Length: 108
Image (cartoon, rainbow, N blue to C red; front, top):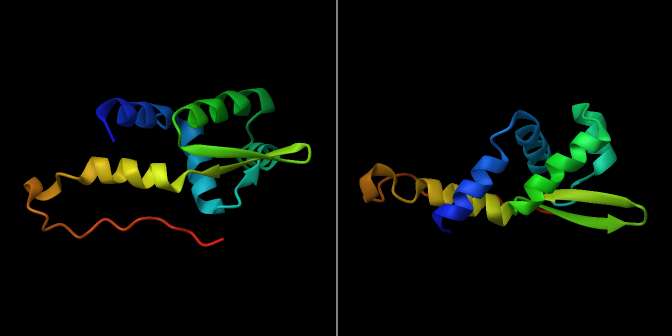
């Protein structure tokens, strides 16, 4: 990961609603949630939710897929793990004495 990608991803979750959406999708697992379900759960109006989902998608932190007439969103765990690894790659002054970063690999 490079610094521009890290800044894009961090800036996309540096907003209360988007951080809540991302955390909800991480918790939901690989199947994700429909846009309607996300909006209902977090009480975010559809037009506002659409804007936030676009920002998270543009940053590469979430995926979307269409099933019939519904769009489902899920967290991009690989991107999340990459960002965490980037943020912690030089921890402990680069001595590698820190506990190894575990990756998040939810099962379907």
